Length: 320
Image (cartoon, rainbow, N blue to C red; front, top):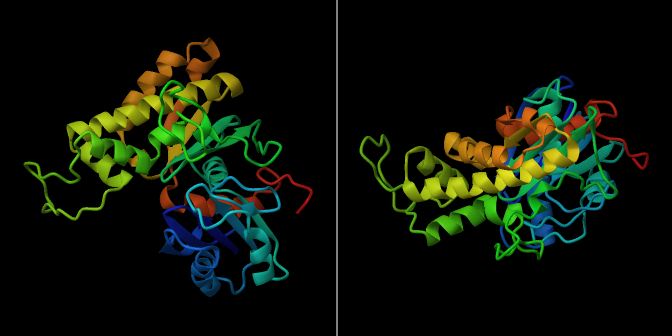
């Protein structure tokens, strides 16, 4: 078994993953908000320690950016960790076990390529659209790391160069600034969205305290809420522009999209497809297929385990 860990801005997850990619057990905890480095670390170890007995190695996906393969992490959506030596701390916690750490979106891409919707594709981009927007790039059947391990970071492709919203990276108009869940819900609220407004035929009673999340926005869009639909269209068009650019650059045949917003279905994927076909005009780019990721909430854990279980397809560093 591999002890797999998935660290994101909203939640942390840990699980045991068998050699065939099956998650045999898993646990989750909310990522503490506005917390210091040690509070975050203590939350993670409380989640992980009960699963560690008998593990053969530790695979980790964490929000970026980070230094790679050294594993010092500075996730944009976890401000309490800046240059935090996550890989080194885990190696000290679990002496004798190999510890491999990569960007969480790269792990999602690896999972989908290894055991999900990307099986059989040689050239694909795996994306996550959630608290942040990230990606991992597979070319010729192997993960592309780039010089610092951050290749495939499509969330910082600029989609609104003139007057686009401020991004956490310091730039303006990045895909992440437009399409990540918290940014999209903020935009929808500014346009008059009321989460969970009751509609005829609703099976669940309306709650005024309904949580404002990207998943709630996606659910309202699927139910026909006009503002939520406009928000999904905004995100879908931005995603289509960024994917067209990535396809022209890398000659992709597949893009998979996971994360909370990917569950929106047609309200997101319809505008995305429309925008993609508007901008992907080169003949070779027209073969591209875009589809939802197949592995759901377990993708991050499966991808983290794949760093150790899938040979050198997703881990090529000699500085192990």
